[in-house]
Image 1 (cartoon, rainbow, N blue to C red):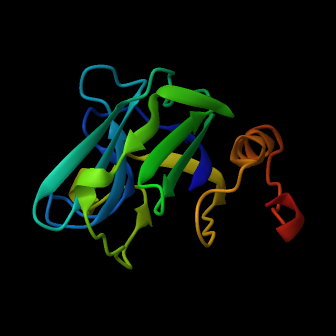
Image 2 (tube, rainbow, N blue to C red):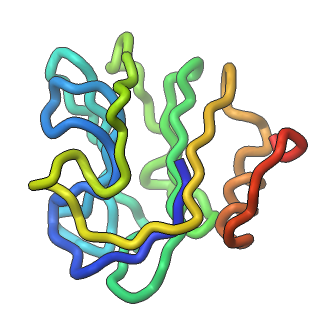
Length: 161
């Protein structure tokens, strides 16, 4: 998932992207951090009620005035999660193990703007990409994310991956 986002007044704990409102639903969630509303908290839920906190971004990722490019990658075969802010790896949320997740079934209800109407952060999205690749992430994933972060509305092709 990659997108450029600028939001209204950030509300701590509100979801920007994801699925589910509890630990009983599979899939990832990005939400406004509860202690620093300029940053995102990445979480990964899986059936059975386990909530894996991947961490709060080191970089500011959310602003009511400045758009930031956010990219989240889940590498299933390697069982890792990775995040980039404005084309740069966010080392607080990078190479995070998803090993505790066991088997995960991705739901059909992943959505922009939050997990549920009462838990959504009002935000302006643009330049959105949802990608799926077979197997592990491509070796040039850093280059792909940097390209998306700096080239607004770029349309990826097979040659990019």
